[in-house]
Length: 181
Length: 190
Image (cartoon, rainbow over all chains, first blue to last red; front, top):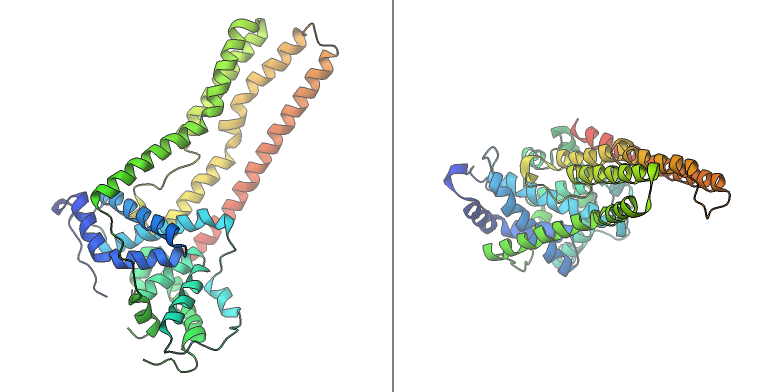
């Protein structure tokens, strides 16, 4: 994935920065919202909230990190706060470590059924605790460990450990039994 | 892109939702109104207590109970100012991107922990002088229509002390729980 160049603060206004970021990362933000909320109505609200917070945040954009890091920090912090707020009414969230210990009931998904695999992936992500969910989404967006650390605030060691665990989880649930491209 | 799940994830079908700047500004306005309304609700109790106490101090009370009512009003106003300053409920801050999730969430937990741990100094203690003066005033100037004034005032004092102790304990307990969550987050950064 392309690393966006740092925009200098004086070069654009809050509106311009937001418009450019929304055009470039809109699809990624929509995928992110989908990973945090399954219900379409609530998801739309969450996505709107992310866009609003993004627009607000660009008033204080100081160019110290890449636009991509900035956008995903805002999006993850907004979405994870939403999950914490909503958690009271929902079932407990789990970590990669706990997921690794849960035996898989069915054999891994056959490669042909992409739609079913995606549904299963969404279900899996929505069970995860905020930090692990952020790592998973960043990983699926093809970010490297350094970017994931910048966005989440996790130490490099923790990022590496979590990626290792999430690969195990994905491999056990999706790749075993002949997933090949 | 070595993991096929990444490919499936990135090529999923999307609705393609966009927001115009006009939509954003409308939503920002709605958010501001919601915050104003929420703050108004937080201060509703004070809006009720202050006029009632003021009327009581002006028209009904005499001597020490009048002083007690005035001290109560001052205590409630102090709590209101603290509530506003410390922000018991808060919207997401504008500097959301200043740090990653771990630091952001820890800051929020620390704020809530400090708010709960210091509940005695900013919420409970300011209300005690007024209530104590009411008790003393009631003992010194027993109401004519009440028999067993001492018993009534004593019961009231015990109930009030018990309520304060329970509120204080619950808040300390919640603050300790938040501290455990903060310790877990700290471990993630090491």
